[in-house]
Image (tube, rainbow, N blue to C red; front, side):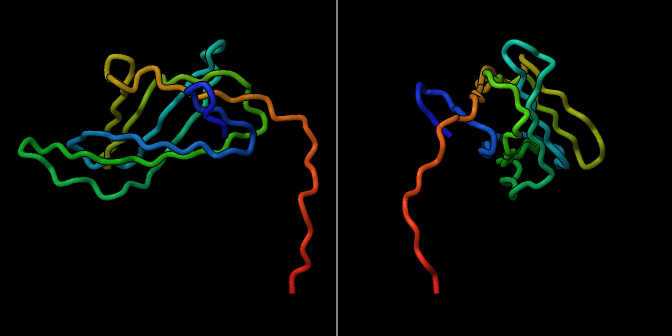
Length: 132
């Protein structure tokens, strides 16, 4: 992964990790996040989790805040380009689906990362040690 130019850049085999903060009244069962390719919106990169760290205590209004940890490896068939956040789907334990799109994404709208071509430079030998 390279962070040059202010953006996040990844190649095949890298693992993309992020944290999403959600405010919710429901008990979460699953969260799904999609990023669309800059030139082909039908090409998407997905993150999904059903594992949540403990949520903060609910406020007087019954709303809690949870940090959702998401990660996904970049598969070798990923099309290079910039991927921009397009939606977040949250599923409750009771089965309710909440679809969060542009107007609901607030400050995270426009979040993106770039997948670049794998370098073609061959590895070089840096050393050899015999172990026990």
